[in-house]
Length: 381
Ligand code: PLP
Image (cartoon, rainbow, N blue to C red; front, side, top):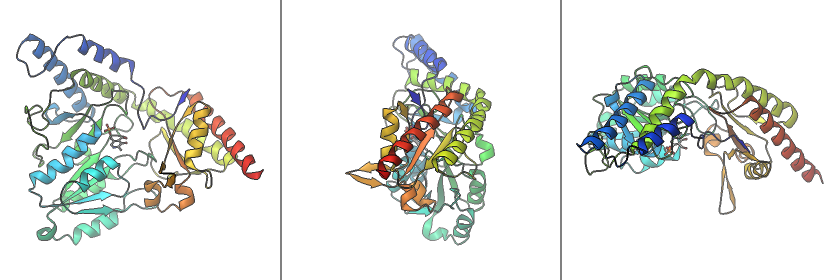
């Protein structure tokens, strides 16, 4: 099997697995317990907090462990709105993940869309104009929700620039760095944002654990209540083994950043072949992108069909669009970039990562070209 779906979830790194097993082997461990076993668990959690903090250049105490990217986004978006007593308007980019879009839709305040350009990057001129005309007495504090890297296309967003505009306007920035972490350098202070959502399983950590970084002093209120863990911001007994695995995975992925960047040459070679031999359109080719991601489309060759045919050939990839109740759902990300229906229905995403080998790229290209040839000859028949 060739696994080319790292943006869906990455294989567990052996070091993360070992850290998790060591944490599990501590025995019954609740980090809130004051006895020796509890203190051992607390030490594991705090070590991982320091590791996650170090990975994004932040203090450990500004990291809140959660159950993953989805919960981190909900806490940032809904927790910021709650802390502002609802005197806020959310500006959500048109290409955000459902985890952000839906958390915003349920935040109880108006939501506006930040449009993206055909390049796949958010339109900063539009954002600037919008903020210049902002009537704070009517709309409250503007809060933008903007991802660092898009999960479908890998296109990087100008988060630093957008955050600077937001600061100038007295607004806040929530950055979804779930797909950026461990693939491009992430530095909280350099980005200039107020909240950063992170997830372990996209970088070789376990599923079901993530973190929210928040700037010291940024408005944030808990959205779930209970035992008051994580300084009252995220009640619930910590997932000690998962957190240990996250800490290890994030440290390793930051060490591995040059290796991830080097995937770009193999990705480019794969795309060059797919374009010349298969006539594909590469999405976001001219935009800054994650090195391990290639989203491409061949108009008329439906994404679902490609994904299924590749699966039969032993290659795991994702569709940019999804099929619901027999109808083709077009990729909203591609639609937001102005792609036509034919392209938006036929985009697939290949994504590689920490354990990908050069031959994986060649094998994916070989498999896709074969699948494409078979589909083309059937169409011709
Ligand atoms: N944000 C982005 C950009 C993602 O790709 C994902 C996962 O697919 C999430 C958020 C949600 O993260 P999690 O699966 O950890 O809840």
